[in-house]
Image (cartoon, rainbow over all chains, first blue to last red; front, side, top):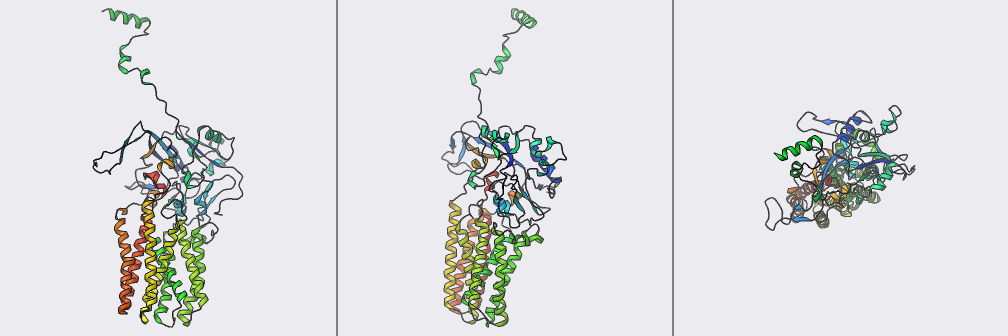
Length: 271
Length: 304
């Protein structure tokens, strides 16, 4: 069971996340927690939800990174307080902020599946979704150790491993309207930064999107062959500074005034 | 990585127990001696106690039997299966020695081979994880096997002193201890000089745009990942702890073994063994506490 599936259909359901569009609102993480706390398997418990040290299991988390192009500016020769010699203190060029939602990538070579001693962690041959059979999970935590992405979190209350199910209880669910048969995070994203589809089919919308935008794999060096892809931010367009009128010039000009406004302008100018 | 006490006790005790059981199996000391009987029981109890301790960190230990099913792919499962299989010759060897004052040559050899395989499987649980660079190398396996062997030989030498210290066993134990700590020093050196292959750039795929730095975590507090994989508390004391593990695990036991050889006093052997086990516990704590997980680059680390 915890060997990777040998009978596969070629279908690889997964997500495509557009880093150019994501605004970092955390709506996908919140709806994920909401849906999955009442859906598949044990509820996603929180510890001390109203106390000082709030923690809990989440299947989707949004990090925010700063990317700085350009050369690094090394520190001064004299060691500044609290810094090492030659430490980078700044970089040239403008930094940009990238919001980065992260959940299970449903890898083709999922290490979390093969390390599982009980057969609880498995990858489905029919659509590639990686799931945990919570009735078999002993809560040893080895799958979470084997995942480089931090996609798995132990539920401290149920003592079993939780992870993104790609909303397997929505996408095939004929009891809900067809428009809702996609992962909760995709359905709820207000910026349309998340897309769901078959990445094994080169003609699917998601595959075309990945092709067009140069979708990327996270941590290719870990050899996990993730199914989910990330679309990198588009190149930034900067306006040439000469074309941008300053606030002061806009306030002082009356060029192009017409009718009554033009009469007032002329009358006031004559005063 | 979070150093869970139950896992530290498990790897230390069961490793020592397998080493002692293998040494008793290979050297076949006279089982009519009380000290030898005690050694057999000690090995058995250390193995059983260590394995029981390993179930303490499970979220659902009542289902632990399921862990014997996935030996085709999982090193944790293989370790469980091998541990159970080893109990067959081990129980026979212990029973024969304690109850019937008997040893069987080939049975001892089987115990030694099975014990070695089980310790190797334990080490592969860690060495097979690509996400923890410090563990993902064959020196990890070498260290686990050598620690088991030197602990076993040390205990054998100490037990032999009850019936007049045997210089061969003392010399063998000292050689094994030295080899263990040379291997461990190489392991520490690799840990200090090499970082894992993952960086914030590779983790986000944004390296083509420039230098990537974590600006904000997903949340204010800690979570399972930062507690389990981002353990950092006393890494600053790592240097001192390494010296303590060398001192308690190697230097003191070697000196005490030599003293025991000269004086013939069992007391020195027993203290040598206790000191060694305390040193190994410290080493095992560092094995986890100093190891960095790939996921830490999503939480501010420069590489892992």
